[in-house]
Image 1: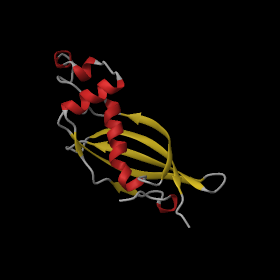
Image 2: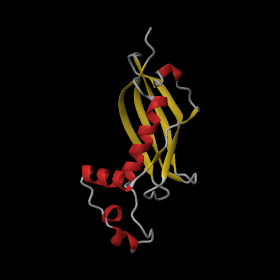
Image 3: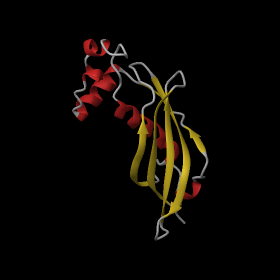
Length: 149
């Protein structure tokens, strides 16, 4: 499914993303390895067992990246020029190996660029686990193509 052109975004619209992903231990390990994140809370089960969480947590940047990834088909697939910013990121609840993440995006703002040839769209993205606990939220701003004439 192609993403939306600038004109197709509606301020106030909420898009429930169909794609879900269950996070494996291997996903978390690979992400930490690729980003050189050595945080023992993500990698060391003995260390994590001694924390308030009692087990390893999934890297929060992976959770955020996953939320962006599952949002792309219904928002910006093939219609984006660039991601401009990710702001106001929060992780209100932990994510563990085996959790299944889903996301939704709410369009909060849109405006044409100064030359009128493209548009800037801002979305509030929320990620939830299988129990519907909010595990990550942030604002994503993109530079979007306008519909070809």
